[in-house]
Image 1 (tube, rainbow, N blue to C red):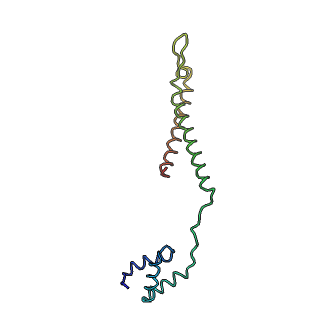
Image 2: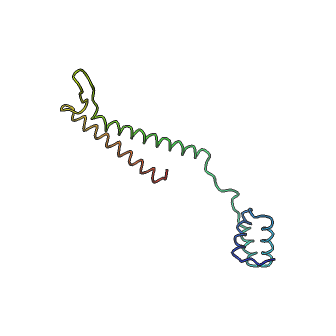
Length: 140
């Protein structure tokens, strides 16, 4: 038998304990353990550990709940963006009639509506920006 470096045997030991080693590798580890007392002790102590059969899995509906929450988040962000566009353009809307073009909101009598529209537009754009920032943090 060829003597292998201890690092190689440690790598093989990991595969051996995980149950992923080939039969030839398992035989090599067993032979190495017979001739190296420290390695055999490490093998015995590792075999005595009780590891779970499989890693803990999340609940099956957890992924579906995360997908629904993500969809709702993007839908809400789209609503904020649409409202931001609407309230940004509202002061510039007009109508055409027999007397020509007439601004609907901008005018001497409607300055309160212009400021309210600008405030709502700003609030919606800030909400969009904050939501976009959260999405970028999450890496989506």
